[in-house]
Length: 529
Image (cartoon, rainbow, N blue to C red):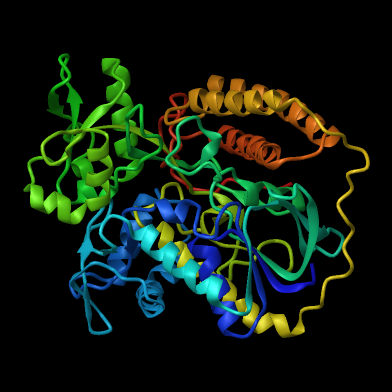
């Protein structure tokens, strides 16, 4: 493939919005997607995008709420940078044709409905009913497909970044084509990693299967620092149902009055429990709500708790949460009259590749945006609906920096083809699937919502054994889609465990029984290759 100006790994909100901004400035862009272009975690996002649009709200209030949720580890400059750019990013989406739900927030003469989610002191979450990610992703994907300067490579998986380590400069990436099963070296002046999080490292996750930490692992192998990987956010409320995997029950339900209850012995709705854990009740930050649910499930020996919004008028529930209502109804559950069985699941990676406010990493020409990046916005816990905001703000920052820099960036040199001369085919797919399950199971058991040093040391031992086995397999056999992901998952698992062991306190999403107190001085966990 001929060199492109910018190679973008990932086709979610971060990758596509960067691609469109760069293409509109006249730069050739190649967007790589593991599946179809409109796939990935953005498509699944239900709640919305936080931005200050109401006259009673303020940038200071949004900054304050974000800092509180981040438990002392947010970079206030990054928080302010992000929050201040929120309204303009929403306006940009509206200009691209994204249709949001209308009602009360003012934006360029439009009145957009604003909802409130956990940890927010005001209504400031812009949404498209309860399928905001779908509206954003499909709109941006259709624009990208139609743009003459954007090349799309679907069903392609990045294997590794191509980096001149002496010069600390990126030259492109190796891509595995899932159809032809061939690996190609793709040159580029610059690369944006927008590959999403690493939440499939856990047995239970609200994310699609592709969330295997690819960008974080590739950047780490290339020589980038990573930060705060111990802070893996567990969404408190994922639907618990045998016929529905990973279906998120949006935070917005609790924002609109849904309450959490323990099940009675007969399975009926029992005591409401969140007020016992936090004065904010169901609107407490996600780490507090997830730990409370985990505590009640273990205390009572139950497999789920109840989330109940049936006290609201049926018309209100159907209007505000049409996708959730329809999905549950297909499973025989009418949420207008029945409670919803929910459990926590791995949802968001708060740490990642260290970047500055231009989304630049430690390697020249390499940028990271969205969930794979550690910008300083989230700290020890992400505030609800700040994720899509971060994608949009830092995609715009990366594009702006590249628009300035690309005219003087050199073309990459000829790239070395992928060498498969020393590998052979393998029929040991069972090894990959077994290691995948083993890794995700012990990460859930030992590195989950509540941790101990003993559990973490057990996890580290198992990670190291698996890593040796996976690397040996990777070196001797022809790679495939699942082996690429497994190699990345074991890398991010090791980063998570090492980061968790380094933090000998409880803060935000990292809660350990051996160090339940929070240190007086907060500091980030930064790992260097």
